Structure formats: C-alpha cells, structure tokens
Length: 293
Image (cartoon, rainbow, N blue to C red):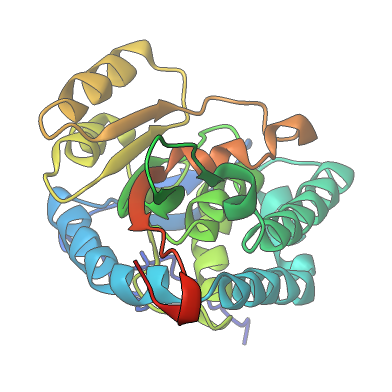
C-alpha cells in the first residue's frame, strides 16, 4: 500500500501553547507551482486579545529577570535554532528560496540572536546617565521596558525579519505579540517551537498567522498594548496604525527595513521600546565624627 505523508499542522503560539485559532478558519498556502503545501491558521481579533492577556501576564517576571539571564536565554534560542537549521532551510526552500538563499537566511538569523544576546546586559550602560543638577542630589536616567509590544512582522521574509524584530524587543525586557508573514508563514510557527523549548517563559513571545488587512487595526488600538511596530510598506495600514496609537498614547514605529543588511541590527532598536525613567536621590554628607547631615 502507498503510504500517506503526515503533514505538519501549523498552529498559532499563545502563552507557551499551540492552540488552533479561535475562529476555526484557515487559508491554503501554495507554492510557486500552485500546489497547496500547508493549511495556515487565520487568526481573529479574539486570538489577538488572548495573546495580549498572555503577554501582559508574562511581563512582570520577564522584565524582572536579570539582564544576564535574558542574555543566556537569547543565546539558548540561537543554540536551538542552530540545532534545527536543516529543518528551517527545508521550509524556506519549500516557500521558494534557493538552497543558498535559505542557508544564508538561517545562518544570519542565528547570528542576529547571538548579537542581541550580547547586548542584553550592555545597552543600559550606553543609554543611562547621571545628570548634573544644582542641588545636593544624584539624578539618574535609566531605560526601562515599555511593556506589551504588538508587531506586524515583515512580509518579505519568513525567518530573518521575524527574528530581527523579536530579538531587540525581548532583549530589553519587553513582551510581544507578532503577526507573521502571510505569504511566508511556515518558519514562524517552527520558530515558535524553538522558543517553546529554549527556556523562554510562555507569553513573552506570542506568534499569530493571518492577514494584516484584518488585524492591523486591532494591533494598534488595543488599550493594553504599550507600543506597536509596523514592518511592511502598506501606507494605508501604516496611517491607520499611527492614528490608532494616539488613542492611548502608545508608541508607534515604522521598521520597514532591509533586514539582510547588518547595519539594521543595532542597539537603537532596543531603545525604541524603552522608556527613560529619571530618579532623584539625596546626597548624604558625612560630618565630623561620622554624623550625617
């Protein structure tokens, strides 16, 4: 008897689990020959809301971890991706890349994770400061994570763009909800499997599949989202996102970049989702005999 292949089911990733979409809908992903290669979940507004709840629940613990521990976890993600690189190369080829292009994208994605792992315990020294004041006080400015970040990931890359936007966000102690590429979604869910087995707490990264046309407004007007990042080139969607962001004064960023260019990996992307908090502390003067005044 001829054996039937067991095809992979590509589900979404919320709170460290892999549920099917609440809507029960899906779309067929086809290759260049027009053949169906996978059924992909068509996420709904409810899925997005569930992901935001999961992200908010994970924020306190993740932002409270030491920078060195976050660095270890990002490096572990890179290790896990390295161990499964042949699977990612195969998926990228299935979506139309050549063997050389697929290998380069996977290797660059691994290197990018290592790059941001190295920044986890260093960006604060770069962006914090001790400010001069005209009184007997210390005045410190320190970057702190902004909270829940919603991201509409690049449409033109399956893996590299996804990694390039997630890494600087979680590097800085934030949590995120990401909409993967609609036309190249395979690596997004497989990357979620890497995250789920790499010591990253559930809810820190949540990955949805579906259409930006349906979801971009929800990504930008949810009141428990603190920042929104748009990585595509649809001007109408971008305008809607920036207008909706003003409803609760959330930060909005346009990260439509060429992610294969290494100049677009930099600590300034970490700073985008940081808030600068300033604190004052009185200077204790020590007098004769150790008296404080």
